[in-house]
Amino acid sequence: MLPLASAALLINPAWRRDAIEGGLALSDAASSILFNGSRLAPVFSDRDVTAFERYPLNSYLTHDPEIDLAEWRLEVSGLVRNSGAFTLDDIRALPRVRQNTRHICIEGWDVIGSFGGVRLRDVLMAIGVDQHARFVEFGCADDYYESIDMAAARHPQSLLCDEMYGRPLTREHGAPLRLVLPTKLGYKQAKYLTSLRVTNVLGPKRGYWVDLGYSWHGGL
Amino acid sequence: MHDRRDHHPAVVRVCHWTIALALAVVIPSGLEVFAAFPSFGDKIPQIDLIVPPSALRLGGWLGGALQWHVTFAWLLTMAMASYIGYQAITRNGRQVLFVTRDIGGVCPMVRHYLFLGPKPAIAEIYNPLQKMAYSAVVLLALLGILTGFALYKPVHLSWLVDAMGGFRMVRVWHFAATCGVLAFIPGHLVMVALHGWRNFASMWTGSHEAHGKE
Image (tube, rainbow over all chains, first blue to last red; front, side):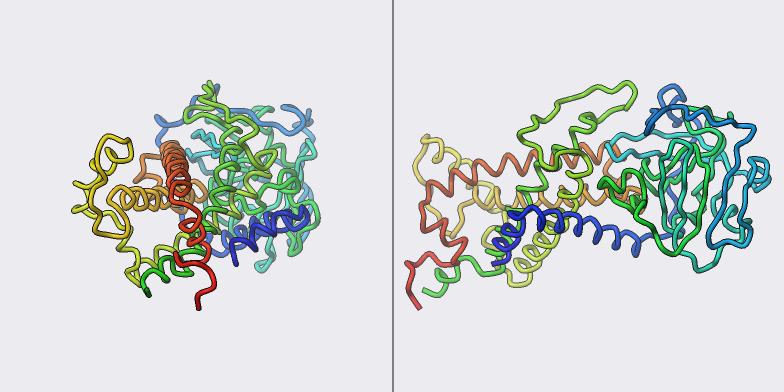
């Protein structure tokens, strides 16, 4: 009988792990298929934005990986025409966007932040991304890492963000450059970015929290 | 004897135990998820409501709990969809569907269970109180599933989030639905215990008859 069979599946620890990790992977696959790239996350007026002092700080190792901002570069590699090191001015030359969007943490809390930067899809265009590439991997100064699907990377609200609340990113919020992805959970939105790599094959390091057990897709 | 032998059709029995198993996983794993942020308010300042005791939680940590929760939420969704679909299409669900003419029968039945009144004459297989309880728990489970999807995909289902009063209210509704289902379970178990082994066995075998009949 089906219910007894599923209960029996849970008795063996190895089957149990396969079952629940498989369940999450299936859910991620469904999330990727059903993701609608033209569906915009809700945007809010300045009145609704959470006060800057009440915007939570979550870090992996440290609030400040002590980046030398003058020497900072974004290392671009992988399936792109223009690989190499990009300065903040190179990135800031792209059309600027400001948006007030909700940041949802996997823990269950949410805040509405004010973010400024450039669209990730404009960056991908500028670096001559392979039109058929599937994933974008990000590395960070604090050794955090993440990877996202190309559909989310091309979403019009996905930003490489260098400003919060109209001011340059502070160190604890990820200076000089962080991801803002209103269609993904908070842990996907890496801070202190140092590298961007376009690939068709994800390596064993898919994301710091993802490798510990969170959903890779993390899509909202 | 046909109607008694088919007391619980196979689809209903499979769905019943699948739903029971799924609830036994999604509720404790949901408590572990809730423990990560046991509040319905702001993150700063954070005011914790109630931190579920670790003995009632499943998953060990937030990530482990979400693996359990998501996997068995799909099982619950599929079993609930099969149950409701079957009950609606075969019209078998009519015997447990609470309708307006049952309202008057609820209070006499409650009085009887509290030893305050005589046993009302019951014309149907299920009495009005049972029908109310079974219909309510199905609605509560549906609310739990609906709010669960809204929390899982609040951008894609932003219309649903708005209809339920915003993201934080969806968490409240999700929690309320869980409390409602939890309130049903002890009463259900007591009634099953009072009705004896054959009644319990019928949810496995389908029949109220003694074993061995062809």
